[in-house]
Length: 123
Image 1 (tube, rainbow, N blue to C red):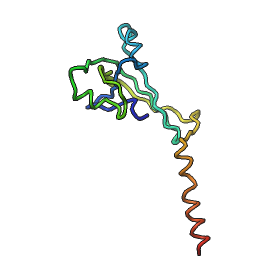
Image 2: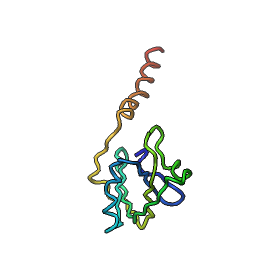
Image 3: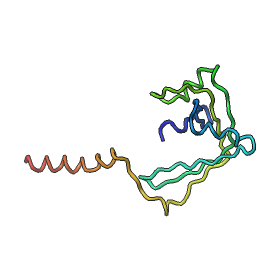
């Protein structure tokens, strides 16, 4: 989840850049500022729900928090921060969470066996 949620002081936040998909729904916040984020940890079969109220903060003239929310390598300028003061969090039952792994995790898994095989073959 790199680059999606940043912990800023005690509240998670999300950077708003021009043309960014999440910014298109700003009108929805005027009628209902509640949000739920579901954070998945597939390899460990864990799921956390975060319940928050969404607030926005203009950052065009405030470089310090904008720099903390910026994603390294992203060309977009952070103009707005979405602040999410948490109201509640909940760990869900892992029963229906299917473990998923990134390609780099799958590639690294057999390395210890390969190292043992090399040692056994050389001795």
